Image (tube, rainbow, N blue to C red; front, side, top):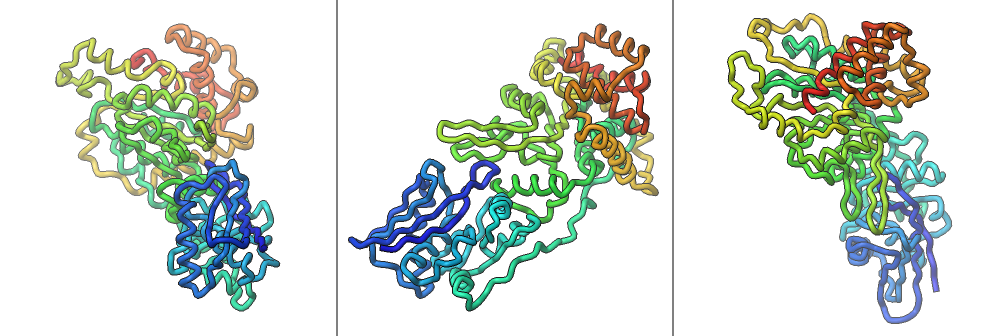
Length: 503
């Protein structure tokens, strides 16, 4: 009897738990069975492995073969175990050496010809393989993604024969080094394209500096979508850790890892017909939703009241916690979701409330029903509410001034303010807790009186009170001053005046 043990990795949310692949050959009628809670795609691997071994001129043992994927209570899906299973059969039957197998982790799907096909979720696998001190061997198409992890040893192969040649020592595979495709942030639309809307641009800059959520309210065609699409271009540049986190989420999603977006802030725009599962993630095998795909970036919800109210309510907890936990009967998965919410809506069903030409024919009851689609608790969690009015014709016909890169200038101011926040408390202002607010947002007597008066007149909740303080702190950071003045408080309050008007 022969036994071979190899290592692979499963996919559980954004994690990649270790899977030990044990292959046992025994006497008896020829058969192959896979145990260890395999899904259908894993059970079908026995046919792919048989074809790959025979077409690669190896002997497929005519014995009773048992393959155990441990731990047994961890669900396994996909074709990622094909390579480990094939090598386990070859090792157990004495066709390849077994001495070095424990130094590697194998992930890859096999074609019937023996070629290796790429799989999803290789980046989290590479992170865990580096932590375990093992070398990761993957299909050649996955090598650049896996090599994103610094200090990880990654080998890439095109065919099963290449892997066997490496293990035999006759044709050693060379460690892969990440190939930088010189990806930059230069692809974002520029603020210079937007005519007028100086108040909205100012709010957008404050939102970017402190990571604050923003709701824009205005008639159709005033530039709300244009403003939102330019927010990623003025956000601080992504750190290596943030880029790796976002890439790991893309790696396990249905889109897979896209190298061209590595250093770009995510910008997701789900349609208003999206379901709650599409937004937060889910499924029998949990996959990340839009809020996780927006991690470290922006999620823009256009026509906010057109979303199903129950769908919008699922955003409340992730906006506070920065993560989403998806629980199913068989398993639980946690995905990060530190996203910046930007939303847009019309002031009424027809969109022309307050138009000077009298185009709005909506009744008071229609307007009330339209605005009631957004709950008070959700609006409380949106830091800033601004009006985006119609742009005067004189500003529209004026050619854009492109003598200065407005996005670049705004990004420099935002980066400076964000650096100040990170030095002060290690996080953006929107993420400050109560204790950090007390330490960083101390007010003078005059400023405190102004905020108290506004709270009483507008009926603001305790949550909104603290959010005004955070926004005021960001405004002061953009001005590069230590103390929050009445001017900063007054401007922060102006971004909450729509509370009573839209709730």
